[in-house]
Length: 270
Image 1: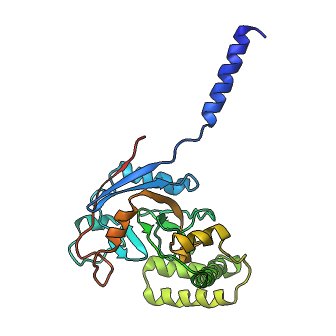
Image 2 (image 1 turned 90 degrees about the vertical axis):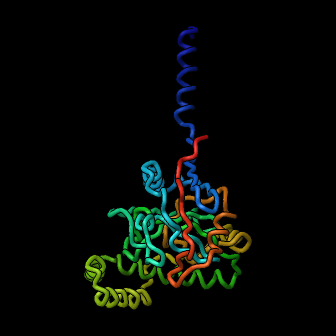
Image 3 (image 1 turned 180 degrees about the vertical axis):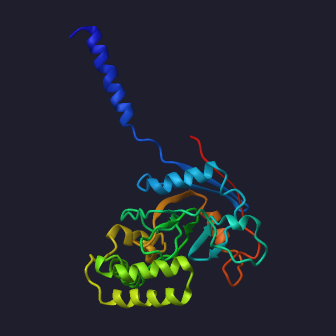
């Protein structure tokens, strides 16, 4: 083999290796009025990752409040209406008009520090366009995990029931009621789904992997949310800040009495 061909071969191999090199996960810093929190976004949920990056680059989160805070559970933000909200004003319904398709991954679970996407009760489990939740959670026991597993499987039964093609009429009526904000019709069809789910068995029941159980029993989290919301990242620095925010006094709507604000959100360059 000539030296020239040898050189071309080496360069080709180097290019192939570099092109296959995995990029570093995206990290985003939330500078809050209580300190900084750094999030690492998962590459396993690209739709949620890319949406969060897009909104961050647009300055969308800058100035937003953590409008829902429950000590021992977690903290929620992402409502653009919160930027100019008056004290005591109800929040949690604002955001882009689009939703993000669910990216529920069995390897990403609601351990302490998990970042998940908020959503309404839509039958596709699609995520809200901007609202997110950081899990604080609690340390679990075998008993509480068993109760959470039962709760998850009840939700899964309802999910698979309403998405069964034979129940399309129920699903369509439920969605129509949601879009029309017809509370009476919504409750009627929600009750039908709940009732149907009680006897629905055409799905694979969920049980926590042993590794997840150990994390929940040592580090803690919110295990009852698994398989129902998309986890798309986690806190890698600043959980003490999350704890401080979660400990703030709140009103009857779980909004902090003193505003807790995201001053800026930015992608962390390394």
